[in-house]
Amino acid sequence: MIRNGRIVTAADDFHGDIGIRGGRIAVLGQALPRGHREIDAEGRLVTPGGVDAHCHIDEPPYLNARLADDFRSASRSAACGGTTTFVPFINQLKGETLAAARDDYMRRAAPSLIDYGFHMILKADEPERIRTELPALLEAGLRSVKVFMTYDGYMMDDAQIMEIMEMVRAVDGIVMVHAENGHCAHHAVSKLHAQGRDGLSYFPETSPQAIEREAVHRAITLAELTDTRVMIVHVSGDEAMEQIRWSRARGHRTLAETCPQYLLDLEPHLHSDEWETAKYICSPPVRESARAGDLWRGLVQGDLDLVSSDHCPYRFEGDDGKKAFGEARLGQVPPGLPGLETRLPLLYQEGVATGRLTPQRFVELTATRPAQLYGLYPRKGSLMPGADADVVIWETGAPRPIRHADLHDACDYTPYEGHGVTAWPACTLSRGEVIWDAATGHVSDAHGRGQFIPGRRGEP
Ligand code: URP
Ligand code: ZN
Ligand code: ZN
Image (tube, rainbow, N blue to C red; front, side, top):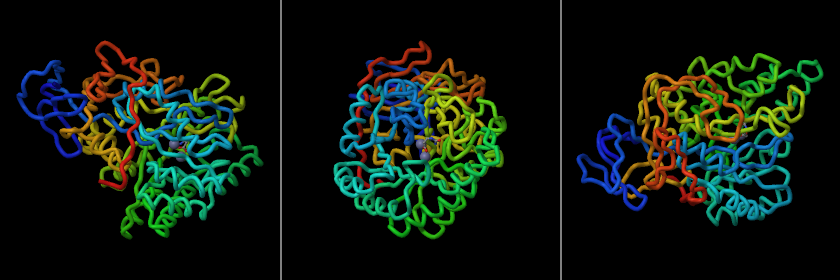
């Protein structure tokens, strides 16, 4: 029994108790009978466990760099940050069948502490394999794939994306699109190299907002032509968001995601050519416009559906980290930031504590909506009777700085070092089991208890 909490869901905000039986929510109410075990949540916020619908775990190396987290460390870190379900990517090795890649990731995920689903990244260089193998995977339960309009080896042309959209539409799935025009970005990089302006401070010039805006417009158009649900992932600024608004005004159900790195003001960290800048390099780049608050308005108004971490943890130091190439030059730093454990505290701080978001909207963006869109609701992302008892009890108080030393991932830095937050998960329950207890600093070592949760078809 979780007793006397301030229970916040996407719809409600009330004081009461949550009774848990057999790993599920059995009852919500007030003055409920004593449980076998009582957890005192007096004066504390209680929310559904977070659902992180975009994170990269144990994927193949990129630009010689290897992701720091496997499913063991990533799930531990997620649990301590209040996330009880994540949806990472299956990323196929060269020559592997798509089914073999899926089976491989099911094995890799076996040590997870928390529950998980999967999206699949599709690469550009094997169109025939996608044509022949993807329909069977979708029939077998895969609900979401990610395609790229940039990155060597990943960048697809419009026809290939449309073909994939048509296949995914058949199961009412979602095509996640990384929307940056890779041709324009490559051109910008070559030009900067030729001019000798290839220090890391030039990174924002390799992909200004126009490059994202054009790609978003194209992705939306391809989705319209194929009548497919499209999710524009990691929306970085107002220009991309304008396109999303435009398509919705035309009656299209374009979906959109952003991430904490685009909501916080990280852009000043991109002004130096020193290695330190690599800690903030992700694609699309973090924008100066974060200061204008446009994305925040998008979250409030509903232009954006969810906030994911896009956790992509390359270590900074070491021969498999951000510095793997040994030169702080454009094109030599793998893009991606760690953020699984800090997603919820940062969004609470910058959203709820500042008054920009209601607590309900915070829950909707970080748990309920991702669960709904990827077919995990109402088992995940809610606190209704019958749902899995995935619950976070929050500690709130004076600001305390984020320190990488306090985090639980396998990366060696956080881009948010020193950022003050006033809320932190005091206790995380997954299917009724306490997997993180901040009071004792104990994280469950029951690795392998996490379950694969198949995505249901369509939206609820
Ligand atoms: O920079 C990023 N976002 N890295 C992760 C891979 C991706 O494109 O999502
Ligand atoms: Zn991406
Ligand atoms: Zn990503």
